[in-house]
Length: 484
Image 1 (cartoon, rainbow, N blue to C red):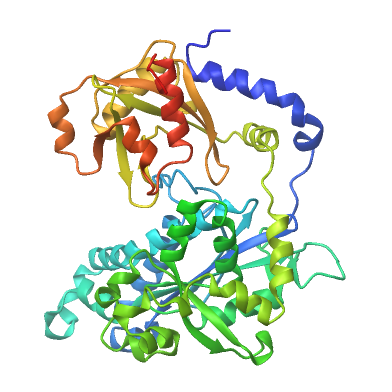
Image 2 (image 1 turned 120 degrees about the vertical axis):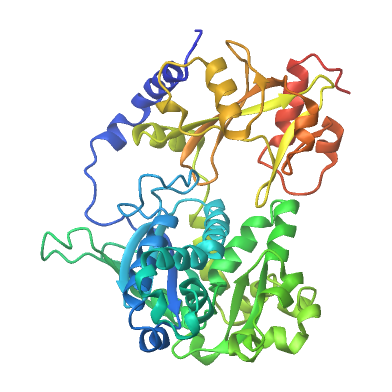
């Protein structure tokens, strides 16, 4: 059957999966509270707010409202994100738990192991630019009062020099029904229509998460040992991922916390993508904080390579405090679902559909983009199911021209190279072949795009998009290349 338009493909694809789930998904009423499962929690806390209120009473209201709105929008929190939020990978996944003073609490229900690393990378990326956006917004909204600031300081400078955001993340399995083995529960108060959607999480791991969040540091992302271990354990099946995780997660301190681990010291883990450059991100007096005790002990320059504080040490630590078995049970519960289960769920929920073009030039080199987190990738057009009656050719050629300023040529009925599922399960994807017809010199001017031979891609040991090597191999066969 020939399919000329993406809309036709989506309709045909959806119909083929509808029968698989009509008795298991369609007629099940939405629960009042989330199903029991594994949840990832985020805390974003405005640091220095008490002093800021006292020193700048004319600004604090704008700061707080900007903080709440910017956090909820940038994180793509369901029901709170703005229409122009284009976080393609994680949109509508996170939900607001509650606001406590100057702290925003978010939760995400996790369905597979790979989602954990994706969520952490994305949250850290947002954290890195969050304070700057808040300062900019406050400056724009507070121009009438700028003159009242001592020494005529700019509002933006005052906000950035006084405030910061402390972020923490932790993991817990929670039940929404009575269970004698449950250490955490989902509580759903049914009192008024206002809080009909409000839920609460209570239990041992929830309390431990709050204790750990209490040691979070300004403009850094801190993780619980269980969450860090789950990410490390998941990466053990892939050598490239294992190296990335080992370099990006470090134990920055061991702290005895009240009510946690029976008084044993808890490893505090920090996520950062350049531990070798700590001198540039730490303020002059931050090393005096208890949260950075391991960095102070090892020395800033030696910390990144000090095996005593490597992320894999948590595996031994969990065994030592008799928590490894529980962690392993939780890890096993997050087994990958089958493609049929994932695809049918996505179709029923009207999730997104993406298309990626594997682009070849006249020398049979492949044009790839270097993504800061993912490494080499092909680029991608997202939400194509909303593009109307465009053909595949029109969709891809116009889309890559508009998004990446690339001139490509796609067949009217392109042969698919591969299908894929986004890491968080939010979208189905299709990889097709394209030819680069633009000026090669134009690529030299792009910092994040370059041509690579198939051999270079095959021998690359750095990060790259999932199945990129396999897709290049398939495309070469389709192009009639002589593959040894």
